Image (cartoon, rainbow, N blue to C red; front, side, top):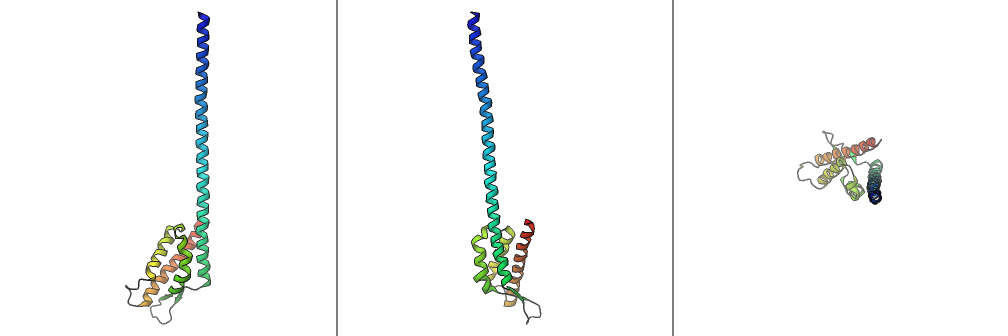
Length: 156
């Protein structure tokens, strides 16, 4: 009878060791799979972020190129208050179409300035003098270009 018990205990011990080994192995494999998934997600997120930033700077490049090729803000000569004149027509025809398709990619500050400038381009009801209206648009435009340049400095 003792030999039968030794056989039963041996089989049960071997089964327990196999079960314990399988549990450890499964935990190890699931941890490795989780780490691999997290790494892939992080990699995809970094690639997406890099592409988004590249697209954002393409828009900024186009805006700065247009700003460098055309003078949107000029000092008015006939005003004693030194108002600035803003080329609203060219902004609506050239600059706005450069910005609007990718507005969702721009920084929050640039987005806010673009939307503020958009609200000014057609709303002249609050101004008695058009020079004052153009001056306010010119100031917002100057802030917009300065903010885009600031975004470049943040990148460096």
